[in-house]
Every structure is written in C-alpha cells, then in structure tokens.
Image 1 (tube, rainbow, N blue to C red):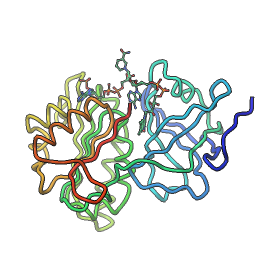
Image 2: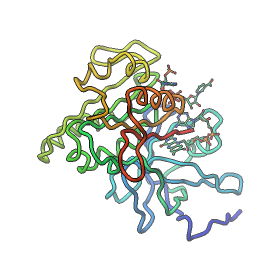
Image 3: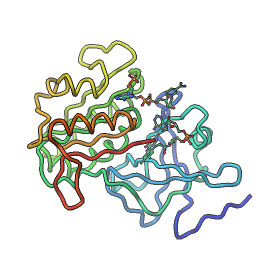
Length: 260
Ligand SMILES: Cc1cc2nc3c(=O)[nH]c(=O)nc-3n(C[C@H](O)[C@H](O)[C@H](O)COP(=O)(O)OP(=O)(O)OC[C@H]3O[C@@H](n4cnc5c(N)ncnc54)[C@H](O)[C@@H]3O)c2cc1C
Ligand SMILES: NC(=O)c1ccc[n+]([C@@H]2O[C@H](COP(=O)([O-])OP(=O)(O)OC[C@H]3O[C@@H](n4cnc5c(N)ncnc54)[C@H](OP(=O)(O)O)[C@@H]3O)[C@@H](O)[C@H]2O)c1
C-alpha cells in the first residue's frame, strides 16, 4: 500500500549498511537527504513503513557533520514496534528521514568551561560519537570525558574507534585529552574498567578520581543522555553541586536528553 508522506517534511532514503555489535545492538547508515543539515549531538526523526503506515522514532546521529551518509546507533527493544522492523531490514530498504534535525544537546551552546563530561547509558553513547568526530570540541575544551555505562562488556560499542580518536587528534595538532571511562553494572569489571552506575560513581567520587578532574561549577560542563532515570538522578546530583541547566541565552552547566 502506498503511504502518504509530505515531500516537504521528509525524504525517502535508503539503508546503506548494518553493523551488528551484539544480537541487540546495531549501527546502521542511510543515504543523506539533499541539503540535510545537523549539528553534532542532534537527532533525526526516522520513519519506517509498518502495516501501511509510517512509524516515526527519534535517533541521534552518530556520524560527523560532513559525512556523505547518516549513521545511527540502535538497540532492538523486545517487542518494540519500530525496532522489530528495523532489525529485519536489508541494505537498500527505504528509510524516511525528516528534513529537520532536532535537539539542543550540542556542545557549541556552552559559553565557557574547560572540561566536557559526556555521560551515557547504553545507546545514549550515540550523540557523543558525532560530537567527538568534530574538531571544534577538541579545540573548545581542554579535557573531554566520555563515560559509557552498560550492563555487559560486549555492549561497549565503538571502543576501537574511540581509542583511535585521541591518536587522530594528536596527529591533527589538537591538544585536548580524551578520558574514556567504561562502566559495567551486571558483571565484574576487568582491570582498567569501572564497576557501577554513573550515578553511584558520581556520588562517591570515583569518576573524578579516575580522571583527576573535579566536577565543579567553574570548569565542568556536562551532557547526559540515555536512560531517563539516570538522567533525572544526574540532574539532581549536579544541582546539589550548584550547577544549573543550560539556558538559551547562555549560562548554565549541563544539558540532558532522555531516550524514552
Ligand atoms: C531524543 C531521542 C533520541 C533517541 N535516540 C536513540 C538512538 O540514538 N538510539 C536508540 O536506540 N534509540 C534512540 N531513541 C529511542 C527510540 O526513539 C525508540 O524509543 C526506540 O527505537 C524504541 O522504539 P520501538 O518502537 O522499537 O519500541 P517502543 O515500543 O517505543 O518501546 C519503548 C520502550 O523501549 C525501551 N527503550 C526505548 N529506547 C531504548 C534505548 N535506546 N535503549 C534502551 N531501552 C530503550 C524503553 O523501555 C521504552 O519504554 C531516542 C529517543 C529520543 C526521544
Ligand atoms: N525484559 C525486561 O524485563 C526488560 C527490563 C528492562 C529493560 N529491558 C530492555 O532491555 C534493553 C535495555 O537496554 P540497555 O541495557 O541498553 O538500557 P538500560 O536498561 O538503560 O541500561 C543501561 C545501563 O544504564 C544503567 N542504568 C539503568 N538505570 C539507571 C539509573 N537510574 N541510574 C543510573 N544508571 C542506570 C544500567 O545499570 P543496571 O544494570 O544497574 O540497571 C546499565 O548499566 C531495552 O531494550 C529494554 O527495553 C527489558
């Protein structure tokens, strides 16, 4: 059945490739709509035809702003309407992409700060991949702290790409340091990794100890993305430290994004 989508609103693109990290986690790429613009950290709205209707869901873009394709990092949710369909798609399949990009979790909005903390659970990692692929953020901050918390070690996707970023930055003459902190919650952590939730390790000072950086109002700017309960708790912890949400007219130390 033909579906009715306004050509002003969305563009019918193609699935280019799918990379499986685990049976539930995938990175997929689509062709990019002509003229599509986004800022690293923003999300796209993607549509799949399911039983004669287009079902729309939000997906953070993981690719660099100048990539000729768009990339996303996704989990297949048990019995999820959109992701059950996504899981079955082969390259060449149609994927609708809304022409507008969305979201305010972009590092260019911080007017000051020396250390950028990026806190992610699960697929909340996605926007930080795109952000770290932009040279601007390496110039804007002295230290970049990426914290990725997952249940099991095989869910630390993008590890090799992230490890390579520091080397690439040095080669490009960029001096910022990348601190990659990988956390596990449902199995013991190997040496060099951390055990426990982001919220617990923030409260007990383990994340600051691991980086040697204080999470304070003067220097730290924070982005948190993923599980909404984690996001809510992180906001409370930061407020207890005197931090306030990023404001439209500048000022503020943190910005967050809930995935559901
Ligand atoms: C701003 C924004 C950006 C998003 N970006 C991404 C992204 O980059 N990658 C991604 O995989 N999802 C992302 N999501 C979630 C995504 O839009 C859908 O919710 C997800 O694809 C599930 O859709 P579904 O129809 O299969 O399941 P639904 O029937 O919508 O099931 C929803 C349930 O699945 C669980 N769930 C949904 N998303 C996730 C997730 N990411 N991780 C763990 N559990 C989840 C929650 O329990 C939720 O209640 C984002 C959501 C928002 C609001
Ligand atoms: N079948 C089920 O009963 C069931 C239940 C839940 C989820 N699911 C599905 O399983 C998938 C889970 O995806 P996921 O593992 O990527 O996401 P997730 O459940 O959000 O877990 C990702 C990481 O976030 C941590 N976390 C969860 N809540 C937190 C909080 N309040 N504060 C701080 N950290 C928190 C988790 O720690 P912990 O390990 O300590 O939680 C885990 O390390 C989803 O598809 C979901 O729908 C299924």
